[in-house]
Image (cartoon, rainbow, N blue to C red; front, side, top):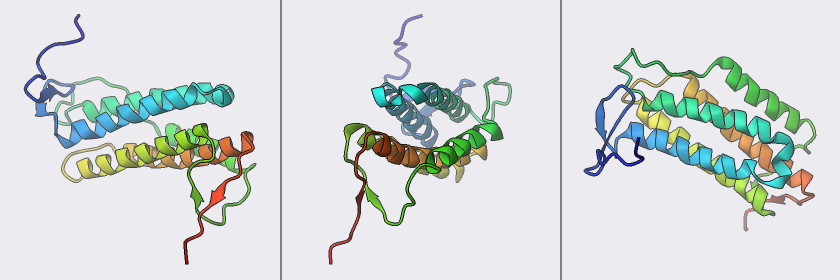
Amino acid sequence: MKIYTKTGDKGQTSLLGGTRVNKSHLRIDAYGTIDELNAHLGFLRDQDVNQKRAEKLSIIQDRLFVVGAMLATDPEKNAVKIPHLKKEDVLFLEAEIDQMESGLPPLKNFILPGGHPVVSYAHIARTVCRRAERAIILLSESSAVDELIPEYINRLSDYLFVLGRQLALELQIQEITWRPAK
């Protein structure tokens, strides 16, 4: 099978189930942003400081492929067999957040993203995750979206925020608190 099919050259693509839609369709934007997030997580996973959590980040990447498949499936085509998210996937993220937060100083102010490239990259992934969440919510206003998808993506953005803080701690980077100019 060739990587190029030439069927998308005129601005359309197929959903799982065969329905053709414009590449500007909200569903394409939603799962395309999930794909972008997954690539960012792969880069984050590959950083040396994340060796101890590489397996957990791989699990999250796997779940993002599930989210992508769910979003890429025409909701009118019930016969398409794809994996689905489970409540346990959300609970996994919550447990990881709780574990990391237990060793972090309490957050009293907003923090500025940055201080180290890996910390910054966690925050970049978080902002892409938030964009994916907005695209999914917009899609859900006009089309069926499994209710666990926005919940999982919302929790994932929380996880990425806490991961950024955890990375700063591990790398001994001082968090920069935001203090508005007077």
